[in-house]
Structure formats: C-alpha cells, structure tokens
Image (cartoon, rainbow, N blue to C red; front, side, top):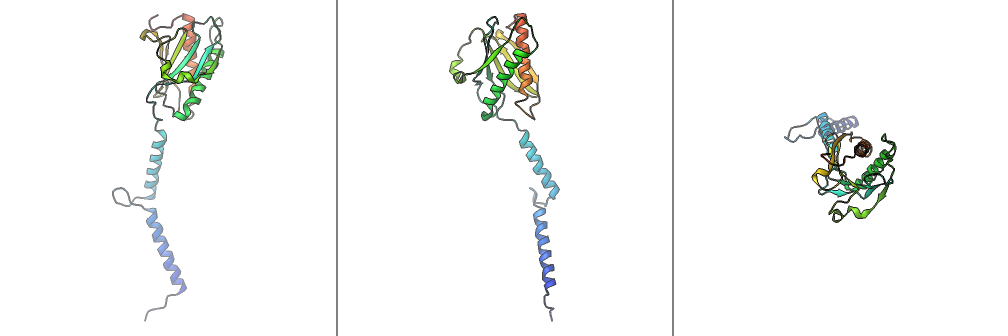
Length: 212
C-alpha cells in the first residue's frame, strides 16, 4: 500500500523542481548546442559590449565645412581668416557643431595667449556663418585666408594648413598625439595648440608655402 503524501513531502518535491529549473536557466546552450557555463556566457557578453564600445564613429562620406571661422583682429598679419574642413574626424553628425566650435574657440585662445613673437599680435574672434557649410561656396580660394583640413589619426588628430588651392600652398601636414578615448572634445585642445604654434612659426618666417 502506498504511503500518503505528507506536507513535508510536497515541500521537498517543490524545492527539487525549483532547483532543476534554476539549473536550466543558469546553463544556456552554446552556439554548438552544448551547455555553456554561466562564467563563459558572462565573459562573452562583456567581450561583445567592449567591442561595441571601441567601434569608431562613422566617417563623413564627404568633406564637411565648419560654420565657425576665426577672424584675425590685426591688419598687419598676412592672413585675415581661418576656416576649417572636416575630411575625416569621424564625429557623429549630432556632435559636429560642438566639436567645430570647440576647436575654433580653442585656436582663437591659443593664438592670443600662446607663446609667440610679441611683435606679431594674434588677437582674433570666432564668428559663426552657416553659409560657408555649403560646398558651392568653396569653388575657389581667397587671398589672406588660411584653410585647415582636419582628420582622425590612429593616436590623435591630423591636420594640414593651406594658404591657397595649389599643391605648393600646403605649408604644414601634421599628426598630433591626443588620447580620444575619454573625452574627444578635450582632445581637441592639443590640436588647437599645435595649429596655433604652426601659424606663429609661419608668421615669424614668412613661409606659407611648401617650398619656401
């Protein structure tokens, strides 16, 4: 004769069933159909998250012209305006305006307060002009104008300085080390400082071409 099921027996059966279900959830199947350990699954998820975190932002399919200009205040300088063209900085579209403004303001500050020839004042102001973002407004080069091309390097930023449109008008082509993994906007400060230093050197030597 079978023994009647007691309350203690029912509780034991329920506990056994719950533990079995928990074990099934804790050991999901791997891609090959075998059971994977919780530690292995957790490590795989962390690796995937890390890979997503370090993926670079998509590059601009075409050059992007910054709407921020640096206008020089001193008429004695050989240039009046500095403009910027993004040829691969890889900023997401929603971050570009702030990045471009940060760089322009940083360059203006570096030109004014950085070390340089005291006889060559470099005061300037930053002006916003949305019209210059239109590529059709860049069909020719103007005089007394410095053009800055900008891109992303493996360990920082790259830039070139142009006094005109001809190949010989490129008077600087530089890579600047600047860690970007923590704060990409903060990493623009070394870039602005380096551009300012190159411009000061060009003013000092009077060299705004590749061969002078």
